[in-house]
Each structure stands twice: as structure tokens, then as C-alpha cells.
Amino acid sequence: MSERAWSLEEHIVVDAAPAEVHRMVSDLRNMGRWSPECRRVWVPRPPARPGSRFVGLNRRGSFVWFTTGRIKSLRAPEQAPDGSGEFTFDIGILGLPIARWGYRFEPEGERTRVTETWQDLRTGRGSRLTVLLGTVFAGTGSDRRIAVNRAGMRTTLDRLAAGIGAVTEPRP
Image (cartoon, rainbow, N blue to C red):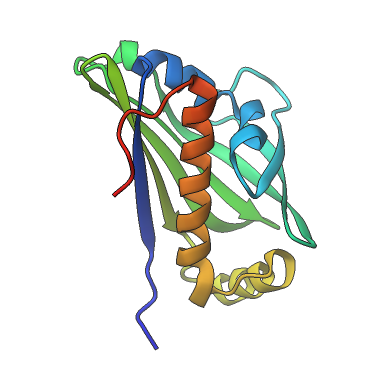
């Protein structure tokens, strides 16, 4: 049995400015357009900002589940000296932490490198329960989570790029 992976990242380069891509991704209502699991996001008090909470409706195959989220960081590219942006949020279920998802937006000339990140937060107290809940509600145990998330991240980034209009750097 291989060692469990605790984090993952994927990226794509798109033909758009970092600020434009950041605006699209940080509007959580768009997440259902790109993610193969997330169907809808409800933000009770838009616009989203650090500390904002939200609810996600997720589905994969016959499995349907709700999660709760909280935005950890939201930095627009215009606010950074290097023109990069960031957006991260934590996801949980029943008050227990599951994962931290994030996006970085880095300028590459007139284009933007979008990096999606995932970090497993199912550690410490309650971790066995969240692993079990992931298996029961989402149909994915921790042994398959990296593969499922990698495929989902690639789909999300490809859909985001298609929504912007062009992918300028093919995947390795």
C-alpha cells in the first residue's frame, strides 16, 4: 500500500489577465460551471471576502452531499506588487475539517498561470469520522482521493480555460 498523499496541485496557463481570472474564480457562484463535483455554491452574504461562509452542493455519480466552507484568503492581483492573486477556502462537513482548496493567479506576460491546490485537513481528532463520511457520502476513500482530486482539478482548470476562451499551454 502506498503512503497517503496530503496535498496536490495542478496548473494551466490561460489567455487572460490575472485580475480577470481572479474575479471569475473568486465568485464562488461560478464554481458549479467548472468543477465536476461541485454543482452549486450558496454565499449567504455576497460578495465573498475573507471569513465569509458558504454552502456547497456536490455530486459525483449517484452520490450527493453538502459541505460548508469558509474563505481563508482573497487577494486580488491589483493588491500585490508582483501582480499575483490568491484565493483559498476551507471545506468541512458537520463542523469537521476536510480540505483546503486554493487558487493562485500569476502573470506570465499577457497570460495567467492558474494553479489549483488541495490540502487534506482530515488529521487529528475527528479524522477517522471525516474519512468515513467521505466514503459514505462521496463514494471515495482516502486511498482514491488523490486520483479523484487530480482528475477533478484538471477538469476544473480545463473548463475554466474554455470559459475564458483559450488554453495557451498544453498539459504535460
